[in-house]
Amino acid sequence: MNLYIFDYVVIICISGVITFLLGILAYVKRSTFSGSTTFILICITSCIYIFGHALELTGSTFTEIDGMIKLQYLGLPFIPPLNVVLAMQFLGFDRYLTKRNLVLLFVVPLISVTAVLTNNSHHLFYKAIILKNVGSWVLADLEIGPFYVIHGSYTFGSLFACICILFAYGKKVKSSYRLQLGAMIVASLLPMIASFLYLMGQAPYNMDPVPAVMCITSTLYVIAILSSDMLVIAPIAKEYVFEHMRDGVLVLDPSNHIVDYNEVASCMLGGLNRFSIGQHIEHVWQTQMAETDLPNWQLNKDEEIKRELEWITANGREFVLFHVYPLYKKNGVLAGRTILLSNITSERLLREDLETRAYKDGLTNSFNRSYLVEKGEAYIRSYREDQRALSLIIFDIDYFKSINDTYGHEAGDETIKYVVNKAQSLLDEHVILARYGGEEFVILLPDVMLHEAVHVAEDIRKKLEQRPIQYETNSIAVTASFGVAQFYDHENLNELIKEADKALYYAKNNGRNRVETFGDLS
Image (cartoon, rainbow, N blue to C red; front, side, top):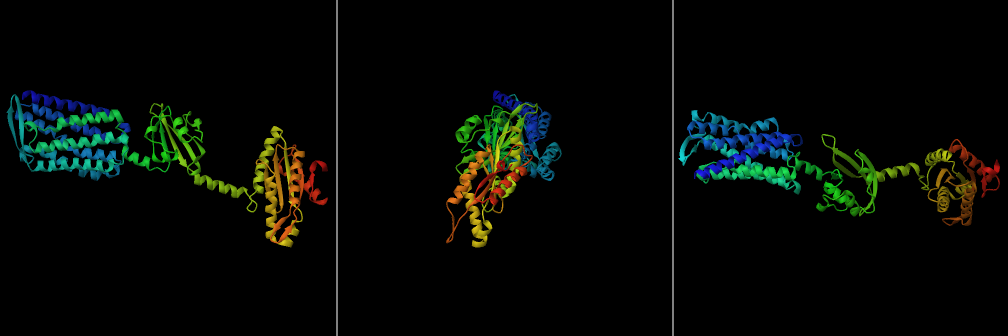
């Protein structure tokens, strides 16, 4: 029997030591845990309670035992409400922990402490403390009073509320945080059960089993901390935000292996799953996005960079903003990277549409004058430095005013579209065809010599004269006149256009439906 009680005291002391070490660990990691102060206070109050109970069991006089009971209550009443606070912080509900609510939460514990410290005067907490000898040990039988009922009810209610809160919101947590959640639930559940058994008189020798049970809860906390890094910032709240972001998020370690991801990233990359954790991002990318190269330039730099990517998914062509954020430890060492994947398809398509509207002619869908001038000036600057060939064709529809006057403006519009379609069918993709104004058009031909440009103009001219346009019941003959010039050392695009325009003017005055070059006029 003596040995049994001795073993019990040893277990209690071990529980106190583990709890003390937990407090030190929480203090060391306090900068990464929003509930560090609360957890440290739980450890301090638990140590006071645990070691106070151990000293109570080793006491041999009423004064010693009564003093140790009072010492225990400097910690015991505060543990349950502190667990409620910790649960709220774990869930990210700090906004509810106002000064007013905290004061209300700790009113009963403060009353309990006061009642115990002054119990010898009123005996409202314990009606009597009766000592009994069990072998060589002196144990105390406590006869509870009305204040103890209030204290016990509040303690039970606080622990029960804590468990309910964790169960209610714990289903939202990822599996990686379930060990932490389980440790917190057990830390409230086991003491509550042990306390209930103690009050029902089921504890051996009527000794309080809660301090011994806390050895189990403290061990669970240690396991949770070492295996899943428990002391992190509000993991459930973080997880909720993480999973409900509109953007895809990938978290990588310094070696670019996947540490975590959210549901949006899983959808965007074609189905990331739990087996992707620990795999290199390049392997996962090649598996899921084989048609889109992984931008390796992002993963070899320790700086924030973003690029736009275009890839093909089940939904078709999509545009994604690939944004990499490096993560650093306090000492400046790279801790990993966060990749943010933002679907910007709508914005990109809108931008392309606006650019199209800004640079395309509404009638013919060819480029407009603004685009021609912008690109032409860029070609002039570049080709002057590189001494590359650049030619320009300007042409307009012969007798266009007559077509408008005879058949109407709709016929004129159809004629313009017909001419553009025929010309476009004979041009390479890199060639710029622009509507310069009215029935006048300009073709800019990069890396094309003058004689080659003349051949292009002749091909278009012949194609137009081969077949008339059919408009309603009318057959309208369409021809065009062309002026061709080549870039040599012009200051700007306007000078080149003027030369081609002079050749066009000459073609108009010499019978139309012909091609003339500026070189032949100079």
